[in-house]
Image (cartoon, rainbow, N blue to C red):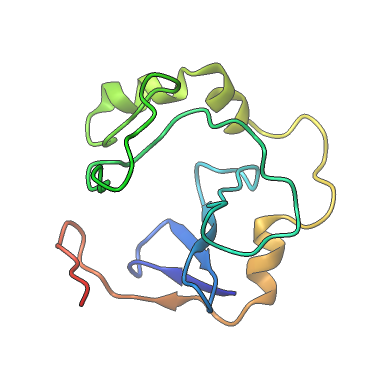
Length: 136
């Protein structure tokens, strides 16, 4: 695993797999309270249960909808948090509100921040905010 931040001033640190480049986890220094874990079950080898039902789909403004349809009938879809009312609507979902609240019981095992502390230093990618990123 490797850790990266998009910019020097970025508040999110992403942990990704060095083999398949799937994001394994994201830690947001302010919002996540060391209580949120994100995993993409179809992109990386895993040895744990990932059968947690999704609560919402977020940041889908660049989602390649031609690959697979978004399940908007089952769960709410948020294409961007650019507008305050979208952020409010997202945080008002009961499961999201619980997720972003401080834990009621102490975490068992390792937290995302424990893993970050053991990894190589965080790589800063130096991307400009709002700039387009192209792949070859």
